[in-house]
Length: 241
Image 1 (spheres, one colour):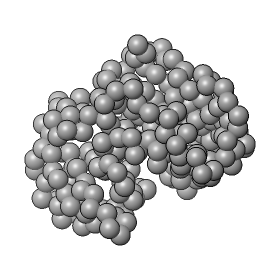
Image 2 (spheres, rainbow, N blue to C red):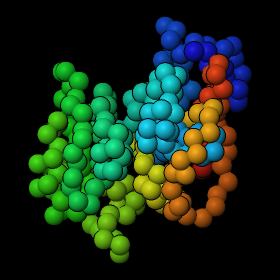
Image 3 (spheres, rainbow, N blue to C red):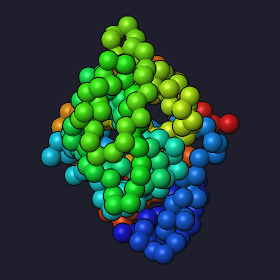
């Protein structure tokens, strides 16, 4: 699949399977700071977060997955909600921690790590969820980070980010689901949104950012790639210097 850089770097089209593709994508997506918070999601043209199978997998393609792997490799922690873990499973990232936000501690459905990986899973939730989290996450070592709950009985997105920073994970990418992505966006602490747009109408009604995104805010286009079938890969900066 051919990717073409549209903005702001104009260059020749390049194949995501070429020998230098990872290096080129890595350079395009490199965070400008060691402390950097990203949201990385894929949506259909109508803004649906899931495809026909009820997951994001049917919206994705090889180019999107290669960019996803690069973004993960540039992060200290990949933050997801427990519901996303249960719905989509997850192979543990090769170079970063998988960080799972949970209220109940139910982490059933995780895929085992690749052979030879020793990646631990960072579990963030109320202290009373620790025992269940350790019992249901059997695929990898669990490092439990107790997070105080807010007024609604669950950890706030601010508290999740604070706990990750305190653990030394200052470069964070949130992959959702939609509710968690919207809550993280509403903190005002997101530096960048990496949004892949799949060239299709999904009509599932599941908004990619949920309904709780805080106040409206302008964005600046930091980069845009397009593949040969019309998939778009945008970097939106929320706090441009």
